[in-house]
Length: 500
Ligand code: HEC
Ligand code: HEC
Ligand code: HEC
Ligand code: HEC
Ligand code: HEC
Ligand code: HEC
Image (cartoon, rainbow, N blue to C red):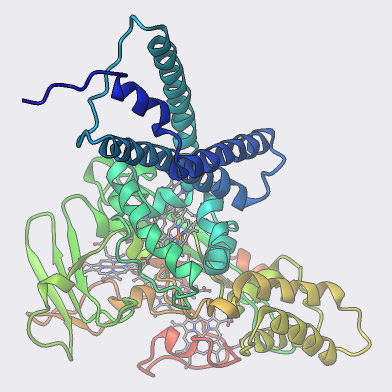
């Protein structure tokens, strides 16, 4: 039998001095410091004086709360250890159980302080964690804290139709599970950024990107019937006069839902009761040797490239969704040809300068080690071509094209991130509709005729462009005869040759 020793209550004594230890003291200093820092940064953020600085958010809503929490943890660890230690020194073995006696004034005061303190702490945590949530989902967190790595994506994003759509709406998707997934993944990315251990260019496709159903289709109603869309694509030849060579297309975008129109056209692929699956033989999904279609009646047809024998690995099969065509909805890097044509069309570049199209594209297709080097060599190269002429605006416009589309430090540009809409600069639709995919019973894949996806309403310049041909005209290719070569457009228009 062990009777409690008479004398002062050991629990009371312990409580009195258990807080006095180095660990708790250090914790208290850290916690108080970070609490002040949090309030200071929080005020800055609320008053907007630090808005422009993306690091402010990470300090106030990630770093300061982390320090506060670890400070408080230290205080309690110190207290707990000290309490055990004191009990051991007094020969009690285990410390006496905590007892609160509300009839004692001191206990009541301590309890009141404890409850108020906890309440304030919980409130702050709630505000803080909500702000942390908002902040870590913000575009500045995604795009600017990882500035060097994701700078190119942020730059392109700001110029696109989705400039007002948050990064996370496409990259994370909705729901707590997706949020946690993304943050776990983010820890790895933070490590990669801190130790400069990320690949350049950042590889795509992103394999853990949520399916379009959970991202794009939260805003875009897949049943929508788009019908035919007219697109005017202003082009200029690489001749001395920079001759305009515009193409007006009527694209049969159509739709895929029979409730809202006849399922047909370009958007047919992603219908509710049709399924298009494929296998790509390269990581960027640019070469597609095997395609399988299940139509609305359940009939399955498989198309293969001549070289592809046997059956693909089931794990490699991907079901086509929005992102297989719209793979650059937010980060579109223009090719030099596209960007110079656009700048000529908008009269940013002076089209009266002889051969400016060719010269500008030529300078933009050279390799430069850094952005600064590119900008200065393009400017001086262009000036050297037009001695004695006032070309400041045109020089600025070409440098702006370079700045917006080329990121040598990150090795990012249009050739590293091929866009799959269309077929001129990249294989795009012709990855499947190239006329070389044949079904098992010998039927070629449909939609390979030039009029299957669009008709060319008009082509050329000036009055010619106003002459619309409702049934379409055959495409007149400039200068080069392309028929019968067995080539697809992107075999030549791949940016490796300054002429195209
Ligand atoms: C409209 C949807 C959308 C928005 C908004 C969006 N992205 Fe993307 N992003 C994509 C798609 C689609 C890809 C390519 C995915 C694939 O092919 O796997 C991509 C790719 C990327 C890549 C990989 C490298 C590359 O360029 O392919 C990075 C990095 C990236 N996005 C960062 C961001 C950042 C930072 C933001 C916000 C500033 C953002 N994204 C906003 C859709 C979006
Ligand atoms: C948070 C909502 C949202 C999400 C998510 C979203 N979009 Fe959009 N998207 C929009 C809005 C809004 C517009 C129209 C912008 C405008 O016209 O101002 C748009 C426009 C477009 C356009 C027309 C672009 C153009 O240049 O005219 C395409 C194509 C498109 N989105 C595809 C996608 C794809 C593919 C995804 C998934 C990777 C996606 N969107 C995700 C809201 C969204
Ligand atoms: C087979 C390729 C393909 C697939 C798959 C695809 N699209 Fe498109 N989409 C196109 C093309 C091509 C256009 C018109 C080209 C252009 O905008 O220059 C277009 C146009 C659009 C537009 C603009 C249409 C308008 O009415 O203004 C939106 C928005 C869009 N697509 C969203 C989607 C969404 C969402 C999905 C997935 C449910 C999807 N697309 C799947 C090829 C595709
Ligand atoms: C992954 C392969 C693949 C890609 C990439 C692809 N398609 Fe298709 N497309 C198909 C298949 C398969 C069919 C249906 C073949 C059949 O009917 O058996 C089809 C059918 C079509 C049709 C006929 C739809 C109808 O009315 O029945 C059009 C138009 C079309 N595609 C346009 C495009 C365009 C434009 C692009 C590029 C933006 C594109 N496709 C990219 C596989 C693809
Ligand atoms: C599988 C569908 C499909 C087929 C087949 C197809 N096209 Fe296209 N074409 C497209 C799409 C999609 C675009 C892109 C429109 C855009 O950029 O918005 C396009 C764009 C073009 C452009 C404009 C290029 C530019 O950027 O200036 C020309 C010219 C063109 N096609 C000619 C042809 C010719 C010639 C053929 C026959 C050899 C053909 N197309 C076959 C889908 C197709
Ligand atoms: C044998 C190589 C070759 C093939 C294949 C080819 N092109 Fe071209 N293309 C050229 C050359 C070279 C020029 C430059 C002519 C100039 O600008 O003076 C050119 C110019 C053009 C232009 C006008 C100016 C420009 O560069 O923007 C368009 C539009 C065009 N091609 C579209 C296409 C389409 C669409 C296809 C596929 C149906 C195609 N080309 C296939 C070599 C080719």
